[in-house]
Length: 250
Image (cartoon, rainbow, N blue to C red):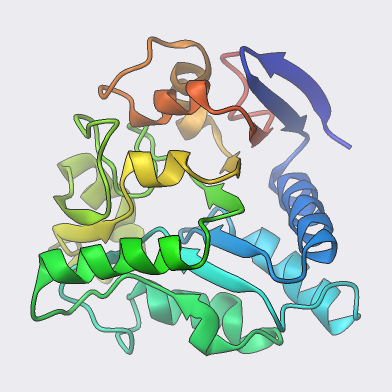
């Protein structure tokens, strides 16, 4: 069990390493799903949640958690990539979670990367969340520049699902997932900050010293669009689960 501290409204669980972060997060999700089998989850991509997804897969195989009635909404998708592209977030979710658990894929939602009408597609995503009574438990990562989902610095608090331009820093951070920097999409479809903040409960994961400044700013810095994760300070049920390296500036 990680060491718990409270910073403002936010509970912070400080773990020894990335593996403990994954176990702590998975335990919260398992408890939530078992308490409400029809729960609506908000899910994230990137390197940080992969360990948690492995824990969930293992527990599902052991019969410790049942996803058959769960619904999920992902935070974002690269603009221009369809779900069959190996670097799309739909493909990522299938490979790292959905293909390995007993979830109905028709109940898993990821923003459209290819679309005829971007604005209508984004409105449809918001409507689908609303139709399912909102997100009960939202998983987040945090970018080294403080972005949550693809809400880059400068994103307004009242933003909803929309197409955004990615900063050079985010493109650089994501280059590791592609053969070279030129292959990284420069735009994405993302849930907005207001959309995220409407989730009933939020869990943010962060590991590594490169996230320490962003984590500290999110918890202790001034609230504002310069560091989008700082808006989480106003949420009534938000927990950060971080390793010692990400917590080193607290």
